[in-house]
Length: 354
Ligand SMILES: Cc1cc2nc3c(=O)[nH]c(=O)nc-3n(C[C@H](O)[C@H](O)[C@H](O)COP(=O)(O)O)c2cc1C
Image (tube, rainbow, N blue to C red; front, side, top):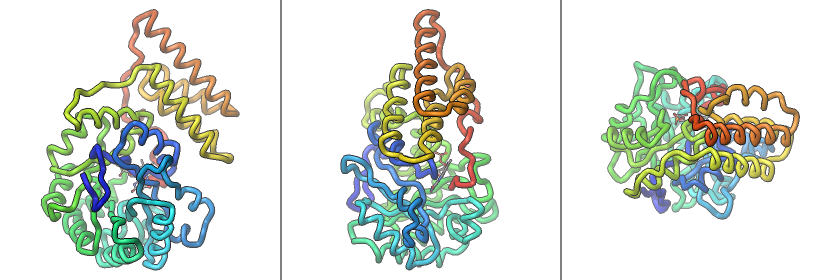
């Protein structure tokens, strides 16, 4: 799949997720073959006034790999500045967030609130298109609509393209749904039918496995799929999709040894790339992700949350996996337990969630 001059191969993207898709996690997903990663949404206002917390999140992918930057805002001048900053660090595309349902974002009439004001949204797209070089595509990510009575995604997407957007991503929930209920693939299909055929459409929402990816593409005709929560502690999904979309057999889920080694790699990256008081918090999150769905994971999560330093967190996880590996090889017991939705969503329903 191509977005202007930018090719995305395989046709699968990592969804931007606030406080999740930081540089370590993006790096892991890139190493597992995701087609493209995008930073979490960054306030154009905060970027343009040089807020250190926000500029610290404006990070280029490692080793020259391509990446996108997502910005949000409402003032064209701030969007202009923020887009130029994204390009200055090497972004291959600039995505505009028009889907965030969080109260503080909507209160500022940004994010999904823009779906109620298509003309203002168009002005923002035009401002960003004018700010960046012609070879940098400007893209828009939005929802099905504001609420059940206002599911205007098809018209809205076409209006964004008319203003200059080169790719559209649709999360099939409305703003009022937040993250509840189900993402509706039918609205994604309607957007595909409404858009000019040369504009790629990315389907998004509730894809957590290879079957879900294939189903969404088949049902909607979307050109690629963006995956968020399904990738947490599960970057293998990208390598599996790389194989399957190339017509090769699905290599299947990872073994325990591989999970442990990727956990180690992820924590190494956190230690190398993230400094400051949040590091322990980030490592604790990674501990929970890589054990997700495995026997005893809830207990591990609680114990890790009580640790006071990185070494202790790492040691608990090493110990946990060693015991699981032994349990599997000596007793022949499967390491997985049944996963419920709360396992998947646990800890990610923050007001940050866009
Ligand atoms: C913790 C969290 C943070 C999110 N932050 C962003 C964000 O910064 N920008 C954005 O466009 N969407 C954001 N989203 C929405 C996701 O990109 C995606 O649209 C949504 O989670 C549905 O996809 P999924 O079911 O594959 O997770 C966030 C979602 C979560 C759970």
